[in-house]
Amino acid sequence: QVQLGESGGGLVQPGGSLRLSCAASRSIFSIVTMGWYRQAPGKQRELVASITSGGATDYADSVKGRFTISRDNTKNTVYLQMNSLKPEDTAVYYCKAGIIWGQGTQVTVSS
Image (cartoon, rainbow, N blue to C red; front, top):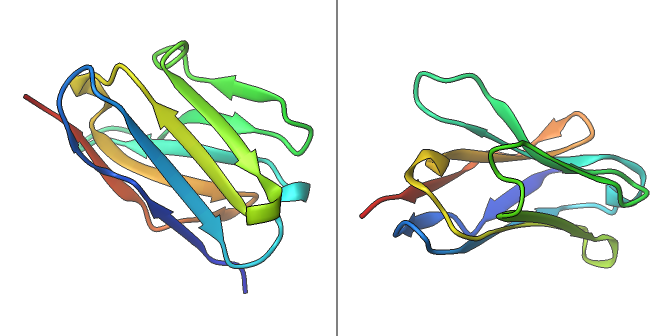
């Protein structure tokens, strides 16, 4: 059964950078759309970025120009490079591959 494991979250100062990784237990990324979502306390879960099997990307307006999603199908891994982080980026970030969700990783942006 496919499982997703996120890593790379943590505490960072405003303006800093983090790179999130999501690794799958099996090779499925080549045939499904993958995405990163986030959910802050009291807020709805929202799409941050997605990447299709063909490599097309989509980003939330709030992260355009700051975040980059990429995939490496040979490693069954999707990445989210986050630059120029803001306090409002603080949330639990979830990886999604097709209909499968990861467990989430906490990102906290604070001085």
